[in-house]
Amino acid sequence: MNIGDKYRHSFTVSEEIYEGFIELFDDRNPLHVDDSYAVARGFKSKVMHGNILNGFVSFMAGECLPEKNIILISQEINYKKPVYLNDTLSLVFEVMNFSEAVNVADISFVFVNESNIKTAIGKLQIKIFE
Image (cartoon, rainbow, N blue to C red; front, side):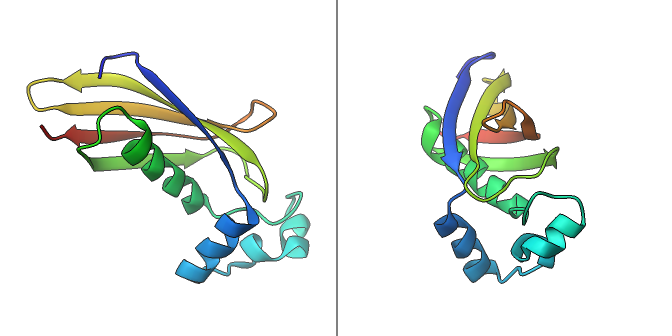
């Protein structure tokens, strides 16, 4: 893993993912489940749960990086724009720093929707085990 390396993957927030999240975590906040409630608050429809994006980050870290023996040390995410059902998002990781002495990488990430609008940004730190 080298500074400047980038990794990309696309995700679609499908009905299956949305319903699975609700079933697993029972988060039925009206902003996430009621179109009329969300529209009345200025959104185009119900807004997907932000933690769905955290799941995509977890998948990307665990399955798309070249190193498989990792553990997440920390993760931070800032939501910039709403994500809606059936949106396709591109997630890009970029290695910002890598310490060979302790095998720790600092990674920034960005989610971009089909209109090339940033929907979320963040960073994570991973430890690579040998």
